[in-house]
Length: 101
Length: 356
Image 1 (cartoon, chains in turn red, yellow):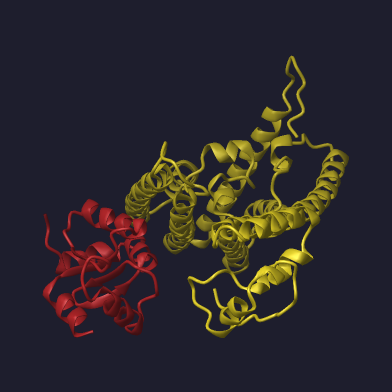
Image 2: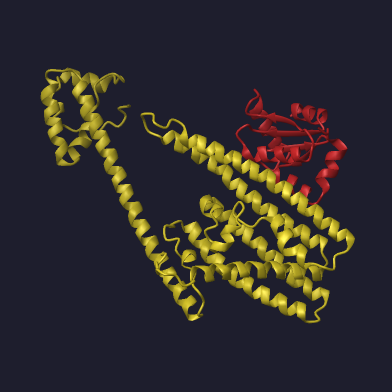
Protein backbone atom coordinates (compact mmCIF):
# COMPACT_ATOMS: atom_id res chain seq x y z
CA UNK A 1 0.00 0.00 0.00
CA UNK A 2 2.79 2.40 0.95
CA UNK A 3 4.42 1.62 -2.34
CA UNK A 4 1.29 2.78 -4.16
CA UNK A 5 1.15 6.01 -2.18
CA UNK A 6 4.85 6.60 -2.79
CA UNK A 7 4.57 5.94 -6.53
CA UNK A 8 1.45 8.07 -6.79
CA UNK A 9 3.03 11.04 -5.06
CA UNK A 10 6.24 10.79 -7.07
CA UNK A 11 4.53 10.70 -10.42
CA UNK A 12 2.04 13.26 -11.67
CA UNK A 13 0.33 10.60 -13.76
CA UNK A 14 0.56 6.98 -12.73
CA UNK A 15 -1.04 3.97 -14.36
CA UNK A 16 -1.02 0.48 -12.91
CA UNK A 17 -1.50 -1.98 -15.73
CA UNK A 18 -0.67 -5.46 -16.96
CA UNK A 19 1.44 -6.22 -19.99
CA UNK A 20 -1.26 -8.55 -21.34
CA UNK A 21 -4.19 -6.19 -20.73
CA UNK A 22 -5.33 -4.56 -23.96
CA UNK A 23 -7.72 -2.16 -22.28
CA UNK A 24 -4.78 -0.86 -20.23
CA UNK A 25 -2.94 -0.39 -23.51
CA UNK A 26 -5.90 1.61 -24.87
CA UNK A 27 -5.75 3.98 -21.89
CA UNK A 28 -2.00 4.44 -22.42
CA UNK A 29 -2.68 5.29 -26.09
CA UNK A 30 -5.23 7.88 -25.00
CA UNK A 31 -2.72 9.58 -22.71
CA UNK A 32 -0.13 9.52 -25.46
CA UNK A 33 -2.61 11.19 -27.81
CA UNK A 34 -3.17 13.86 -25.17
CA UNK A 35 0.60 14.45 -25.24
CA UNK A 36 1.36 13.41 -21.70
CA UNK A 37 3.71 10.71 -20.55
CA UNK A 38 2.39 8.76 -17.59
CA UNK A 39 4.48 6.51 -15.39
CA UNK A 40 3.34 2.98 -16.19
CA UNK A 41 3.76 0.16 -13.69
CA UNK A 42 3.03 -3.27 -15.12
CA UNK A 43 2.22 -5.29 -12.03
CA UNK A 44 2.67 -8.64 -13.77
CA UNK A 45 6.33 -7.84 -14.31
CA UNK A 46 7.28 -6.72 -10.81
CA UNK A 47 7.82 -8.96 -7.77
CA UNK A 48 5.10 -7.65 -5.42
CA UNK A 49 2.51 -7.16 -8.16
CA UNK A 50 -0.10 -9.33 -6.43
CA UNK A 51 0.02 -7.30 -3.21
CA UNK A 52 -0.30 -4.09 -5.20
CA UNK A 53 -3.35 -5.47 -6.98
CA UNK A 54 -4.95 -6.36 -3.63
CA UNK A 55 -4.09 -2.97 -2.16
CA UNK A 56 -5.62 -1.24 -5.18
CA UNK A 57 -8.89 -3.06 -4.60
CA UNK A 58 -8.87 -1.98 -0.95
CA UNK A 59 -8.37 1.62 -2.06
CA UNK A 60 -11.68 1.32 -3.83
CA UNK A 61 -10.42 0.92 -7.36
CA UNK A 62 -13.39 -0.14 -9.47
CA UNK A 63 -11.87 -3.55 -9.87
CA UNK A 64 -10.05 -4.43 -13.06
CA UNK A 65 -6.95 -2.70 -14.29
CA UNK A 66 -5.94 -0.14 -15.40
CA UNK A 67 -5.78 1.90 -12.23
CA UNK A 68 -5.07 5.54 -12.94
CA UNK A 69 -3.69 8.08 -10.45
CA UNK A 70 -3.41 11.77 -11.24
CA UNK A 71 -1.75 14.14 -8.82
CA UNK A 72 -1.55 11.41 -6.20
CA UNK A 73 -5.27 10.77 -6.26
CA UNK A 74 -6.97 7.61 -7.53
CA UNK A 75 -9.03 8.52 -10.57
CA UNK A 76 -10.32 5.05 -11.29
CA UNK A 77 -10.34 2.65 -14.20
CA UNK A 78 -11.15 3.03 -17.90
CA UNK A 79 -14.76 4.11 -17.22
CA UNK A 80 -13.73 7.03 -15.06
CA UNK A 81 -10.99 8.11 -17.44
CA UNK A 82 -13.41 8.08 -20.41
CA UNK A 83 -16.10 9.97 -18.52
CA UNK A 84 -13.61 12.62 -17.42
CA UNK A 85 -12.29 12.94 -20.93
CA UNK A 86 -15.67 13.40 -22.57
CA UNK A 87 -16.60 16.05 -20.05
CA UNK A 88 -13.35 17.87 -20.80
CA UNK A 89 -12.12 17.55 -17.23
CA UNK A 90 -9.35 15.08 -17.97
CA UNK A 91 -7.32 17.55 -20.00
CA UNK A 92 -7.63 20.14 -17.22
CA UNK A 93 -6.41 17.64 -14.64
CA UNK A 94 -3.57 16.54 -16.86
CA UNK A 95 -2.39 20.09 -17.42
CA UNK A 96 -2.17 20.62 -13.70
CA UNK A 97 -0.16 17.49 -13.02
CA UNK A 98 1.19 16.09 -16.22
CA UNK A 99 4.57 16.11 -17.87
CA UNK A 100 4.19 17.07 -21.49
CA UNK A 101 6.26 15.16 -24.02
CA UNK B 1 -4.32 -44.06 -8.03
CA UNK B 2 -5.63 -44.79 -4.57
CA UNK B 3 -7.20 -47.99 -3.56
CA UNK B 4 -9.60 -46.34 -1.17
CA UNK B 5 -12.38 -47.40 -3.48
CA UNK B 6 -12.13 -50.90 -2.25
CA UNK B 7 -14.91 -52.78 -3.88
CA UNK B 8 -13.65 -56.24 -3.55
CA UNK B 9 -15.48 -58.43 -6.02
CA UNK B 10 -14.22 -61.74 -7.24
CA UNK B 11 -13.44 -61.72 -10.92
CA UNK B 12 -11.96 -64.12 -13.38
CA UNK B 13 -8.93 -61.96 -13.47
CA UNK B 14 -8.25 -62.01 -9.82
CA UNK B 15 -8.38 -65.75 -9.60
CA UNK B 16 -5.16 -65.86 -11.57
CA UNK B 17 -3.23 -63.90 -9.03
CA UNK B 18 -1.24 -65.65 -6.35
CA UNK B 19 -3.13 -65.22 -3.10
CA UNK B 20 -0.10 -63.72 -1.42
CA UNK B 21 0.33 -61.27 -4.26
CA UNK B 22 -3.32 -60.35 -3.94
CA UNK B 23 -3.00 -59.68 -0.23
CA UNK B 24 -0.02 -57.46 -0.73
CA UNK B 25 -1.95 -55.42 -3.27
CA UNK B 26 -4.63 -54.57 -0.78
CA UNK B 27 -2.29 -54.37 2.15
CA UNK B 28 0.20 -51.81 1.10
CA UNK B 29 -0.82 -50.25 -2.14
CA UNK B 30 2.01 -48.56 -3.98
CA UNK B 31 1.77 -46.51 -7.08
CA UNK B 32 4.07 -48.81 -8.94
CA UNK B 33 2.17 -51.97 -8.07
CA UNK B 34 -0.17 -53.62 -10.54
CA UNK B 35 -3.57 -52.02 -11.02
CA UNK B 36 -6.09 -52.81 -8.25
CA UNK B 37 -9.32 -54.84 -8.46
CA UNK B 38 -11.82 -51.94 -8.59
CA UNK B 39 -10.96 -51.57 -12.25
CA UNK B 40 -11.73 -55.18 -12.75
CA UNK B 41 -15.16 -54.64 -11.25
CA UNK B 42 -15.94 -52.03 -13.84
CA UNK B 43 -14.49 -54.13 -16.60
CA UNK B 44 -16.86 -56.94 -15.87
CA UNK B 45 -19.81 -54.58 -15.68
CA UNK B 46 -18.96 -53.07 -19.06
CA UNK B 47 -19.80 -54.12 -22.59
CA UNK B 48 -18.97 -57.53 -23.88
CA UNK B 49 -16.30 -56.65 -26.37
CA UNK B 50 -13.98 -55.77 -23.54
CA UNK B 51 -14.16 -59.15 -21.89
CA UNK B 52 -12.08 -60.59 -24.68
CA UNK B 53 -9.34 -58.23 -23.70
CA UNK B 54 -9.37 -59.44 -20.13
CA UNK B 55 -9.19 -63.00 -21.34
CA UNK B 56 -6.30 -62.25 -23.62
CA UNK B 57 -4.57 -60.22 -21.01
CA UNK B 58 -5.06 -62.81 -18.32
CA UNK B 59 -3.41 -65.39 -20.52
CA UNK B 60 -0.44 -63.17 -21.04
CA UNK B 61 -0.36 -62.41 -17.38
CA UNK B 62 1.23 -65.71 -16.69
CA UNK B 63 4.16 -64.82 -18.87
CA UNK B 64 4.74 -61.10 -18.42
CA UNK B 65 4.49 -58.90 -15.37
CA UNK B 66 2.32 -55.82 -15.81
CA UNK B 67 2.84 -54.36 -19.29
CA UNK B 68 -0.21 -55.86 -21.07
CA UNK B 69 -2.35 -54.99 -18.07
CA UNK B 70 -1.37 -51.36 -18.41
CA UNK B 71 -2.15 -51.31 -22.10
CA UNK B 72 -5.47 -53.03 -21.65
CA UNK B 73 -6.47 -50.85 -18.74
CA UNK B 74 -5.47 -47.72 -20.56
CA UNK B 75 -7.56 -48.80 -23.51
CA UNK B 76 -10.47 -49.64 -21.28
CA UNK B 77 -10.21 -46.26 -19.60
CA UNK B 78 -10.12 -44.62 -23.00
CA UNK B 79 -13.20 -46.55 -24.05
CA UNK B 80 -15.02 -45.42 -20.95
CA UNK B 81 -14.02 -41.87 -21.60
CA UNK B 82 -15.10 -42.11 -25.23
CA UNK B 83 -18.46 -43.54 -24.17
CA UNK B 84 -18.92 -40.76 -21.65
CA UNK B 85 -18.08 -38.12 -24.22
CA UNK B 86 -20.42 -39.74 -26.69
CA UNK B 87 -23.25 -39.59 -24.17
CA UNK B 88 -22.51 -35.91 -23.49
CA UNK B 89 -22.42 -35.15 -27.20
CA UNK B 90 -25.76 -36.87 -27.70
CA UNK B 91 -27.25 -34.87 -24.84
CA UNK B 92 -25.91 -31.63 -26.30
CA UNK B 93 -27.28 -32.56 -29.71
CA UNK B 94 -30.74 -33.24 -28.37
CA UNK B 95 -30.65 -29.95 -26.47
CA UNK B 96 -29.63 -28.16 -29.65
CA UNK B 97 -32.47 -29.80 -31.58
CA UNK B 98 -34.98 -28.60 -29.01
CA UNK B 99 -33.58 -25.06 -29.07
CA UNK B 100 -33.71 -25.07 -32.87
CA UNK B 101 -37.32 -26.17 -32.73
CA UNK B 102 -38.16 -23.24 -30.45
CA UNK B 103 -36.22 -20.87 -32.67
CA UNK B 104 -38.08 -22.15 -35.73
CA UNK B 105 -41.42 -21.46 -34.09
CA UNK B 106 -40.17 -18.00 -33.18
CA UNK B 107 -39.04 -17.33 -36.76
CA UNK B 108 -42.36 -18.50 -38.21
CA UNK B 109 -44.20 -16.18 -35.87
CA UNK B 110 -42.00 -13.24 -36.84
CA UNK B 111 -42.45 -13.96 -40.53
CA UNK B 112 -46.22 -14.16 -40.15
CA UNK B 113 -46.32 -10.94 -38.21
CA UNK B 114 -44.11 -9.14 -40.72
CA UNK B 115 -46.05 -10.42 -43.73
CA UNK B 116 -49.31 -9.34 -42.14
CA UNK B 117 -47.93 -5.87 -41.72
CA UNK B 118 -46.90 -5.93 -45.36
CA UNK B 119 -43.30 -5.09 -44.52
CA UNK B 120 -40.31 -6.07 -46.60
CA UNK B 121 -38.81 -8.90 -44.62
CA UNK B 122 -35.07 -8.79 -44.21
CA UNK B 123 -34.23 -12.46 -44.40
CA UNK B 124 -30.69 -12.06 -43.07
CA UNK B 125 -32.02 -10.47 -39.92
CA UNK B 126 -34.10 -13.52 -39.08
CA UNK B 127 -31.68 -16.08 -40.32
CA UNK B 128 -29.28 -16.44 -37.44
CA UNK B 129 -30.40 -20.02 -37.24
CA UNK B 130 -27.11 -21.35 -35.87
CA UNK B 131 -27.68 -19.65 -32.55
CA UNK B 132 -28.78 -21.84 -29.67
CA UNK B 133 -27.57 -19.63 -26.85
CA UNK B 134 -30.52 -18.88 -24.55
CA UNK B 135 -28.92 -15.59 -23.45
CA UNK B 136 -28.77 -14.47 -27.05
CA UNK B 137 -32.28 -15.70 -27.90
CA UNK B 138 -33.59 -13.72 -24.94
CA UNK B 139 -31.64 -10.67 -26.12
CA UNK B 140 -33.09 -10.94 -29.62
CA UNK B 141 -36.63 -11.03 -28.27
CA UNK B 142 -35.94 -8.06 -25.97
CA UNK B 143 -34.33 -6.17 -28.81
CA UNK B 144 -37.42 -6.71 -30.96
CA UNK B 145 -39.47 -5.04 -28.24
CA UNK B 146 -36.84 -2.32 -27.92
CA UNK B 147 -37.18 -1.44 -31.61
CA UNK B 148 -40.97 -1.34 -31.37
CA UNK B 149 -40.75 0.99 -28.38
CA UNK B 150 -38.13 3.05 -30.23
CA UNK B 151 -40.48 3.54 -33.18
CA UNK B 152 -43.22 4.66 -30.80
CA UNK B 153 -40.89 7.13 -29.13
CA UNK B 154 -39.76 8.55 -32.45
CA UNK B 155 -43.31 9.34 -33.54
CA UNK B 156 -44.14 10.70 -30.08
CA UNK B 157 -41.12 13.00 -30.29
CA UNK B 158 -42.13 14.14 -33.75
CA UNK B 159 -45.61 15.05 -32.54
CA UNK B 160 -44.27 16.70 -29.40
CA UNK B 161 -41.85 18.92 -31.32
CA UNK B 162 -44.52 19.98 -33.78
CA UNK B 163 -46.92 20.85 -31.03
CA UNK B 164 -46.48 23.83 -28.75
CA UNK B 165 -45.49 21.65 -25.83
CA UNK B 166 -43.55 23.34 -23.05
CA UNK B 167 -40.07 22.44 -21.95
CA UNK B 168 -41.22 20.65 -18.81
CA UNK B 169 -43.25 18.16 -20.79
CA UNK B 170 -40.61 17.88 -23.48
CA UNK B 171 -38.07 17.00 -20.79
CA UNK B 172 -40.08 13.88 -20.04
CA UNK B 173 -39.72 12.72 -23.63
CA UNK B 174 -36.00 13.50 -23.64
CA UNK B 175 -35.42 11.65 -20.39
CA UNK B 176 -37.44 8.72 -21.67
CA UNK B 177 -35.50 8.63 -24.91
CA UNK B 178 -32.13 8.70 -23.15
CA UNK B 179 -33.22 6.05 -20.69
CA UNK B 180 -34.31 3.85 -23.58
CA UNK B 181 -30.81 3.90 -25.04
CA UNK B 182 -29.30 3.19 -21.64
CA UNK B 183 -31.58 0.18 -21.33
CA UNK B 184 -30.23 -1.13 -24.63
CA UNK B 185 -26.66 -0.76 -23.37
CA UNK B 186 -27.57 -2.71 -20.24
CA UNK B 187 -29.13 -5.46 -22.36
CA UNK B 188 -25.99 -5.57 -24.47
CA UNK B 189 -23.75 -6.10 -21.45
CA UNK B 190 -25.66 -9.28 -20.57
CA UNK B 191 -25.65 -10.42 -24.19
CA UNK B 192 -21.91 -9.72 -24.54
CA UNK B 193 -21.24 -11.98 -21.59
CA UNK B 194 -23.42 -14.67 -23.21
CA UNK B 195 -21.73 -14.44 -26.61
CA UNK B 196 -19.30 -11.63 -27.29
CA UNK B 197 -18.81 -12.62 -30.93
CA UNK B 198 -22.52 -12.19 -31.52
CA UNK B 199 -22.36 -8.62 -30.23
CA UNK B 200 -19.12 -7.86 -32.04
CA UNK B 201 -20.65 -8.97 -35.35
CA UNK B 202 -23.75 -6.86 -34.76
CA UNK B 203 -25.92 -9.85 -35.55
CA UNK B 204 -29.03 -8.35 -34.01
CA UNK B 205 -28.81 -5.29 -36.25
CA UNK B 206 -29.94 -4.98 -39.85
CA UNK B 207 -27.33 -5.29 -42.57
CA UNK B 208 -26.98 -1.56 -43.26
CA UNK B 209 -26.51 -0.84 -39.56
CA UNK B 210 -23.83 -3.52 -39.47
CA UNK B 211 -21.95 -1.71 -42.22
CA UNK B 212 -21.31 1.15 -39.81
CA UNK B 213 -20.46 -1.08 -36.88
CA UNK B 214 -17.72 -0.08 -34.47
CA UNK B 215 -17.05 -2.42 -31.55
CA UNK B 216 -20.57 -3.74 -31.43
CA UNK B 217 -22.53 -0.54 -32.02
CA UNK B 218 -22.61 2.93 -33.51
CA UNK B 219 -19.57 5.19 -33.48
CA UNK B 220 -20.26 8.14 -31.15
CA UNK B 221 -18.18 10.67 -33.11
CA UNK B 222 -20.11 9.76 -36.28
CA UNK B 223 -23.34 10.40 -34.40
CA UNK B 224 -22.10 13.88 -33.54
CA UNK B 225 -20.74 14.56 -37.00
CA UNK B 226 -23.46 13.18 -39.28
CA UNK B 227 -26.65 13.12 -37.30
CA UNK B 228 -26.50 15.95 -34.79
CA UNK B 229 -24.26 18.80 -35.92
CA UNK B 230 -25.80 19.32 -39.35
CA UNK B 231 -29.30 19.45 -37.92
CA UNK B 232 -28.88 21.72 -34.94
CA UNK B 233 -28.76 25.23 -36.37
CA UNK B 234 -29.62 27.39 -33.41
CA UNK B 235 -26.55 26.65 -31.32
CA UNK B 236 -24.88 29.35 -29.25
CA UNK B 237 -21.17 29.90 -29.65
CA UNK B 238 -20.49 28.12 -26.38
CA UNK B 239 -22.60 25.18 -27.48
CA UNK B 240 -20.83 24.99 -30.81
CA UNK B 241 -17.48 24.96 -29.05
CA UNK B 242 -18.65 22.35 -26.57
CA UNK B 243 -19.89 20.09 -29.36
CA UNK B 244 -16.58 20.44 -31.22
CA UNK B 245 -14.64 19.57 -28.07
CA UNK B 246 -16.94 16.64 -27.34
CA UNK B 247 -16.47 15.32 -30.84
CA UNK B 248 -12.70 15.57 -30.56
CA UNK B 249 -12.72 13.82 -27.17
CA UNK B 250 -14.94 11.09 -28.62
CA UNK B 251 -12.61 10.62 -31.54
CA UNK B 252 -9.59 10.34 -29.26
CA UNK B 253 -11.33 7.85 -27.01
CA UNK B 254 -12.46 5.84 -30.03
CA UNK B 255 -8.94 5.80 -31.47
CA UNK B 256 -7.54 4.58 -28.17
CA UNK B 257 -10.12 1.80 -27.95
CA UNK B 258 -9.60 0.88 -31.62
CA UNK B 259 -5.87 0.53 -31.11
CA UNK B 260 -6.47 -1.53 -27.99
CA UNK B 261 -8.75 -3.78 -30.08
CA UNK B 262 -6.04 -4.18 -32.73
CA UNK B 263 -3.62 -5.28 -30.06
CA UNK B 264 -6.20 -7.74 -28.76
CA UNK B 265 -6.76 -9.15 -32.24
CA UNK B 266 -3.02 -9.56 -32.65
CA UNK B 267 -2.64 -11.33 -29.32
CA UNK B 268 -5.63 -13.56 -30.04
CA UNK B 269 -4.33 -14.51 -33.47
CA UNK B 270 -0.93 -15.22 -31.98
CA UNK B 271 -2.44 -17.43 -29.30
CA UNK B 272 -4.38 -19.46 -31.83
CA UNK B 273 -1.52 -19.72 -34.33
CA UNK B 274 0.99 -20.82 -31.74
CA UNK B 275 2.45 -24.18 -32.68
CA UNK B 276 0.85 -24.64 -36.08
CA UNK B 277 2.26 -27.56 -38.07
CA UNK B 278 3.47 -29.12 -34.88
CA UNK B 279 2.37 -32.55 -33.69
CA UNK B 280 0.04 -32.74 -30.73
CA UNK B 281 -3.28 -31.33 -29.66
CA UNK B 282 -4.08 -27.63 -29.82
CA UNK B 283 -6.22 -27.42 -26.74
CA UNK B 284 -3.73 -25.19 -24.89
CA UNK B 285 -3.96 -22.69 -27.71
CA UNK B 286 -7.75 -22.73 -27.56
CA UNK B 287 -7.54 -22.30 -23.80
CA UNK B 288 -5.23 -19.31 -24.13
CA UNK B 289 -7.56 -17.76 -26.71
CA UNK B 290 -10.58 -18.29 -24.44
CA UNK B 291 -8.83 -16.32 -21.69
CA UNK B 292 -8.23 -13.43 -24.05
CA UNK B 293 -11.91 -13.32 -25.00
CA UNK B 294 -12.70 -12.00 -21.52
CA UNK B 295 -10.81 -8.87 -22.57
CA UNK B 296 -13.01 -8.62 -25.65
CA UNK B 297 -16.11 -8.50 -23.44
CA UNK B 298 -14.52 -5.62 -21.54
CA UNK B 299 -13.96 -3.75 -24.78
CA UNK B 300 -17.57 -4.12 -25.85
CA UNK B 301 -18.73 -2.88 -22.47
CA UNK B 302 -16.28 0.02 -22.66
CA UNK B 303 -17.50 1.02 -26.12
CA UNK B 304 -21.12 1.05 -24.89
CA UNK B 305 -20.02 3.11 -21.91
CA UNK B 306 -18.51 5.60 -24.35
CA UNK B 307 -21.82 5.74 -26.26
CA UNK B 308 -23.71 6.33 -23.05
CA UNK B 309 -21.34 9.07 -21.90
CA UNK B 310 -21.59 10.76 -25.29
CA UNK B 311 -25.38 10.82 -25.10
CA UNK B 312 -25.22 12.19 -21.57
CA UNK B 313 -22.80 14.94 -22.55
CA UNK B 314 -24.99 15.84 -25.52
CA UNK B 315 -28.02 16.23 -23.27
CA UNK B 316 -25.91 18.38 -20.92
CA UNK B 317 -24.74 20.71 -23.69
CA UNK B 318 -28.05 21.12 -25.53
CA UNK B 319 -31.27 22.79 -24.44
CA UNK B 320 -34.27 20.56 -23.89
CA UNK B 321 -35.77 21.38 -27.24
CA UNK B 322 -32.45 20.85 -29.00
CA UNK B 323 -31.99 17.54 -27.21
CA UNK B 324 -35.46 16.45 -28.29
CA UNK B 325 -34.60 17.33 -31.89
CA UNK B 326 -31.32 15.48 -31.57
CA UNK B 327 -32.99 12.34 -30.25
CA UNK B 328 -35.55 12.52 -33.01
CA UNK B 329 -32.81 12.90 -35.62
CA UNK B 330 -30.95 9.87 -34.22
CA UNK B 331 -34.10 7.78 -34.07
CA UNK B 332 -35.06 8.63 -37.66
CA UNK B 333 -31.52 8.00 -38.86
CA UNK B 334 -31.55 4.48 -37.42
CA UNK B 335 -35.02 3.87 -38.84
CA UNK B 336 -33.79 4.85 -42.29
CA UNK B 337 -30.87 2.44 -41.99
CA UNK B 338 -33.29 -0.38 -41.14
CA UNK B 339 -35.54 0.45 -44.06
CA UNK B 340 -32.49 0.55 -46.33
CA UNK B 341 -31.57 -2.95 -45.18
CA UNK B 342 -35.06 -4.26 -45.85
CA UNK B 343 -35.33 -2.70 -49.26
CA UNK B 344 -31.88 -3.84 -50.27
CA UNK B 345 -32.48 -7.43 -49.29
CA UNK B 346 -35.84 -7.60 -51.02
CA UNK B 347 -34.86 -5.82 -54.20
CA UNK B 348 -35.74 -7.75 -57.42
CA UNK B 349 -32.91 -9.98 -58.51
CA UNK B 350 -32.38 -12.37 -61.42
CA UNK B 351 -32.14 -15.42 -59.25
CA UNK B 352 -34.30 -15.67 -56.20
CA UNK B 353 -32.23 -17.30 -53.47
CA UNK B 354 -33.63 -17.92 -50.03
CA UNK B 355 -31.15 -16.71 -47.46
CA UNK B 356 -32.43 -18.78 -44.56
